[in-house]
Length: 555
Image: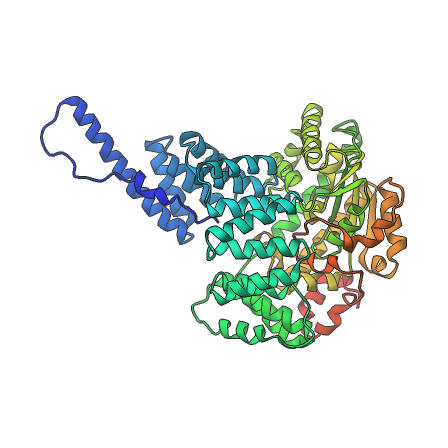
């Protein structure tokens, strides 16, 4: 959720006593208008307090009450936009756009609109609005940092770094600056420099839990660092919020895992999940998978074989997080004719718009029927133009959003000649690796071991369905096989892409470009085998996971 409000809040607040004398009609109307404006301002101040306290329903109700009386109130629309960020980004986008339309010279409105465009992987629109915010207020640190994050996501790290450096000169202690600069350096593989800025952030008490969690991911520890005891002391603070405690527990767990103190490490990973407090409805997700399997049949797809765009440019790398998707993308993107675009939200935005990802919907068939031949072509052409914007001359553009495994049917409705690479890893290793990381609430299935195991079973069930519906078309890339036979599997990947072999694909760790996932340290190293069967270090602690996985657990 976005807690930003314009510092110029006071300009929205009307002050001064109401006139007491009897007034002519025009003055009376003006007085009534001022009274209504003061009432709106009071409601919006209350809405802001509710939003800050995450009482989102109350904040929403008050904003809607203001809009019912003053339909185009820009601040009401702005606060509503902040309420929906992370919960309904499409709705958030609409409210921010309306606020910009009403008050186009407010840099904070443009900045927030740009930030939501980033979340939706609409990078050109994001850049446009954030740059406009900077035109209006050149020293706006939040906008400098946001633009830096956009360029990192857009695979232009050389343009991101100067923005964070400028922000640092403007405000050395802004919470977004040092963390953002460190992330930019980490994504470029400059881990030692990133660690320096993160340590400075900790010393200056700036975003301490985030800084510690990012710091411990800049290297692997062979002996106990001084930071471990510091992290444990931070955890003694009884006033820590859930997010902060979760990040610190994950940081402690990561260091202890590196030191092979596995029982202590797992204690902290469990504590992190408890602190974060996420919940996931496995039964609802299972029903959604049932619907996908029921609707996406070979007959349905055969009837729609002429839909979409016949381009071979799109490549989708799918699978569970931590299954080798980043490594696979890096190998493929090392080819001179391929471009790795990272994790794009574009396809899932289309799926959301058509209702495919609505797990509460009782009529998913209607979502598919709404995709006509013309609509499928329009959506595919728009998506292809979006990919071309990132890499105009690449023969293949790779989207490695792991959870696109949920929408493989949609992929081939839009792009019948697209290539889909499915990354699969030992189920227990895969789940343990997920459990050890501080994923966002969008990955709430990672909330406890049993839920994670049951979710994995549904992922596996859906992927088996896609393989039945599209026999021989999905390339399965097994992590353990890739680790054991790097060149053979790399050649297999490049052959599947329809490209000639290039030795650069064996030197993926030398590739320039940004890496913005938890794998950014690993993919800067040559392939190593220490992650295979790592779960055995935790065998006693992970029995709920093994039981939930059932026959998928290869013991």
